[in-house]
Length: 224
Image (cartoon, rainbow, N blue to C red; front, side, top):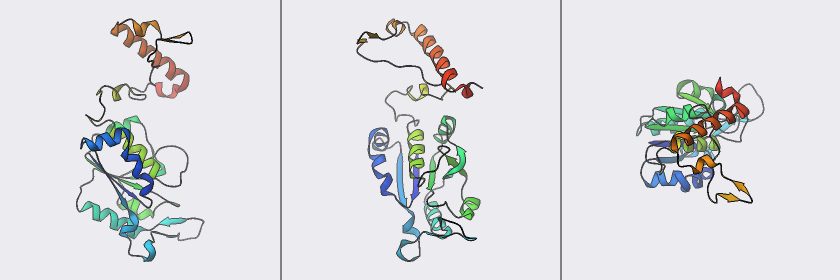
C-alpha cells in the first residue's frame, strides 16, 4: 500500500513514521508513506498557499491553485483509490472504515489548515472526507497520522501476530477484554484463574463475555 500526504507543515509528521509499527511496515516494504509540502506546488511569492476568504470573515483559507497543482502532479504518477480530506465536518473515522481503507492500494491524504481549503477542491477532487473526532485541531496532520497508523497495522504481514488486529477493540463492535501478563500475582492481585487453565475454549468464552460486559458499561451504543 502507498499513502501520500499533502501538508503545509510536513516536518510535523516525519518522526511519526520513523518509529514502531509503521517503521517496520516501511522496512518490510509493505507500506510506503510519502509526505509532500504543498508550498512546493505554489506559484505565489514566498511560498504562499493561503489567502483571505471571499465575503469576509476571520481566518485564512488554503488556496485552490497550489492544492490542485499538487494533486494533479501526484496523479501523473499514481492512480488513487481515494483522495481523502481530513476535516472536522467529515465522516467520523472508525474501525470499519480503517478495515475498508486497508484494502485499498493507493491513498492520498490532504491535511487541512487554517479555516480549511477552497470548497472547489472538495467539490471536484476529494472522494472522501474524514474526521477523527468532534473537535477542531490546528491542522489535519494529526488526523492523517491517525489514519495511516490505524490502516497500516491492518496490512497483512505488518504485525508479528496476524490475529492481533482481529482482536482489537471495535473489530466486532465490542471493546477488547482485560489482558494480563507476568507476574501471575502482584501485591496479592491475581490473574483470573481461567486464563491460567490452558482451556482455550473456556478462555475464549470468558473473553467474549468480558468484552460484552465492558461494552455494555462503557459504549452501549455499539451494541445497537
